Image (cartoon, rainbow, N blue to C red; front, side, top):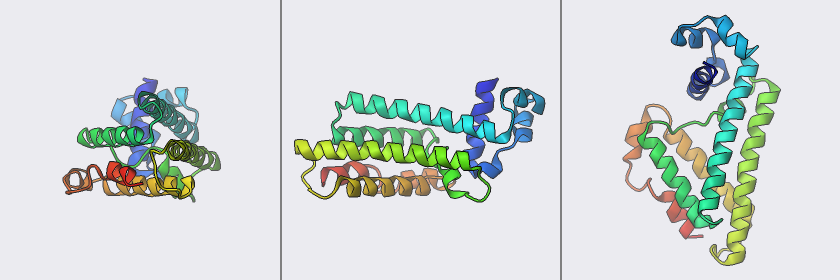
Length: 190
């Protein structure tokens, strides 16, 4: 039951942020009482924290596996990332991540959730910066531009993908000519 609650909470957050998270709606969908949810999560904030922690653990694991299978090769990591992203699009799962709503809906979001989300976001891009630095040292990336600048370009592109591929545009955006493969083409031209 706890996993189902977490799954529905994640879906609500991805759809509408912290304000969309509702014990009543989760209880209705699962045909349980709100008390059952409170048994696992004492408050809306605690449930949202569990969503963020679960999401972070999943993404860290995926990224770690991706880096390991690519042997730390930046271009292969980007190709793996893009492949995973488009697989998610085909399964109608890609869009806003479970952390980003906590970074944009600042008035209603508890401080701890903002800190957790920004921390995760920065951790991911610190890792990408490290991969870029290593790729520059090994000659896989020819440019001598600062690794942070390249990592920020990647960050901007990912935010763009999440924006374009969220909501109703998901299926039509998938078919936009040239969008698929853009991350790999960008990485190959560094």
